[in-house]
Length: 402
Image (cartoon, rainbow, N blue to C red; front, side, top):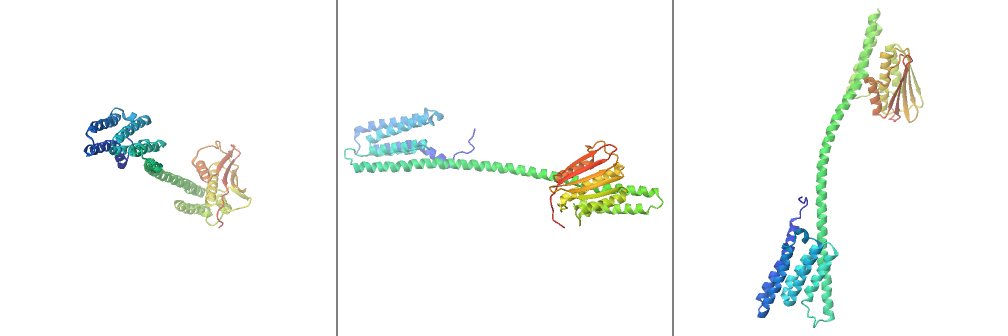
């Protein structure tokens, strides 16, 4: 599997340098040693033999061991110890091979980040300075000076190796976090587009439902009332009253249709609160149907939010329209109760009742949807031949006083 976060160019170059430094330093040391004018002739074979031993150790560790084995801590330690040992032999033989000993500082990077990094740097420093020190004439001050150099060099080079590894790790984490962020942004962009599409579709569907409810609650009921008055006018000689009522219903229906298209509240609520609007609705409904309707308001009246008032008004409209169409009632009661945290609307009649109070007709569904939209609920109790009671409950969310 490919590494999603490969090494940077600098990191790859440094790793390559660490691998070739032993060869470069060994070759440079050997070349300088061979051309040195002070070298005795009999030491050249020994120099070549020790150099061959160092080269064999380095090449053997690189070519004979698999990559996975070479990276293990034990293999790294053994290889480092062999390089340092051959470097010590060569340096004691000829001080010029101190150049080859420097490769130990680079190989110490294989131990990072750990305490063994400092140990490797310290061991290299001891070999480096110990092989050049004339121990027969060494003084306490000179040894202390060399130890101080070893300590400073160990902290500086070992700390540099560890700091480099830490920085590399942070860069990898940063690149991974950046990659994850880019992926998340791309996913969020797709999700945002999907949500916008769904919201657009939901908005269209909600608007269709709203228009369907408004048409049902205004135009359909108005047309029903107009038809009722026109039929009544056909049955009597003096039809002026019925025609006047039909004309008034037509005008009101046209007004409500325009207000529905503009998503405005019913005109009865435009300049009045809910109790007054209910009284106006009851008066108009009684005049149209000829059925006695009594309105009662209980509790302390408070101005409700427009959404709550519109919902209760439309529920009352639908309940009364159902009474006019289906109940064949002689008396109807409408009660609006303010109980503090909730407002109750009850519409009761003494009509024929409903056989199935849980019916899924459009009118009942419209009432339930309106009430759910404001956190309310609807209950219907009915017994065939004994009338029907429709009860709506909504939270008493207060609005601004008019």
